[in-house]
Image (cartoon, protein in one colour):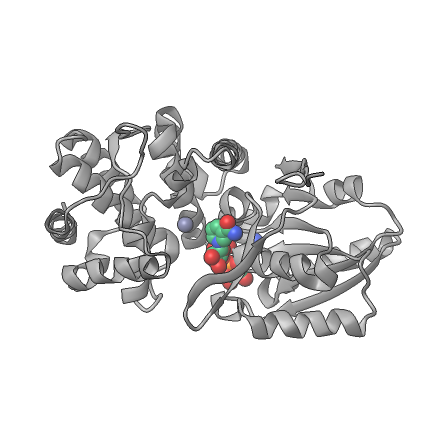
Length: 363
Ligand code: NAD
Ligand code: ZN
C-alpha cells in the first residue's frame, strides 16, 4: 500500500466578495471560530466582524497581537496557542486569519501545528496578502537567524479577499503589494503589465474594480506557477524575480526599506544585467525604470550602499541551502530568458556589481 504523495486539496479562492457573506457560505452555524488578527486590523475590522458573527449565532473568539513583522515569531505564536487552550478550543475549531501577510503566515502556521493541524481561512486585508501571501499554502515565522525559517505548507479551507478592506490601506502599502503583481506580470504577462502601468493613478485611488482585475490575474499566474512546480519544473523560481538583490537591500537597510520597494530595486538590477548581456532592449529597461520612478521607487534609496556589501549579502540566504546565486533574466517585458531547460542563470560577480553601480547612479 502507498499513501498519496500530496493529500487532495481543492478550495475556493474568492476575490472581490463581501467577506461576511463569503464566510457564511463556507462555514456552518455550529462551527466554533477564532479570529486571529493584529491590533490595527482588530480596530478597523476585527471587533466588528466578531460582533456581526455573534449576532448571526456563531461562537467566536478574537485574539490579536502587535502589528508588524517583529511579532511574527514563536513567542507570539505560543501566546496565542495558550489563549486557545484556555478557551478549550479543540480540533473542530476554525481559525480566521484576518490581516496582512504577517497575520496569514503566523495564524496559518499556528493552524498547521495546533493539535497537529486544524482548519483555517485566509482573510487577507492587504493587497500583498490578497495577491501573494494568501496563495500557495506557505506559512511560517521568523527567528533570530532570519525570516520564514520555521514553517509548514498548510493550505487553508478557503481564501476570502474582500477588496473593500483596501480602502483603509495606506498608499505605500498598496504600492508594496503592487510590486509583487508587477514582478509576476513582467515575467509572464506583457498586456497586464501595460494595463497596470496605464491605470496606475486609478489603481492607487484605489479603484476597487481595477484592483480586482489585477488581483485576479496575479493570483491566476501564481497558482499556475505553484502548480507547475509541483510537477517539478522549477517554475516557482519565477516568484523570486528581483528577490535575491531585494532581500540583500532589505537586510542592509536594516529593514527600513519595505519588501516591495527593495524587490523593485532588485528587479531593476536584474533588468540591467539582462540589458548589459544584450538580452533585453535599453528601451524596455527604460519603460520599467520610468514607471518605478512614478511609484516613488528611486534608486537613490540605495545610493549609499556599498555594492560589494550588497553582493555579499545576497550570499547569506544561500549559505544555508548551499545553492549558488542565480538570477532570472528578462528577454522582453512579459517574457523571461530560458536556456536549455533552465530559467535561472549564473551571473559573474563583476557583472552584478556593474549593474548595481549603474542603478545606484539612477539610470
Ligand atoms: P503586514 O501583515 O505587516 O501588514 C502591513 C501593515 O498594514 C500592518 O501594520 C497592518 O496592521 C496594516 N493593515 C493590514 N490591513 C490593513 C487595512 N486593510 N487597512 C489599514 N491597515 C492595514 O504586511 P504585509 O505586507 O501584508 O505582509 C508581509 C508578510 O507577508 C511578511 O511577513 C512576508 O514574509 C509574508 N509573505 C508571505 C508569503 C507566503 O507565501 N506565505 C508571500 C509573501 C509575503
Ligand atoms: Zn516578495
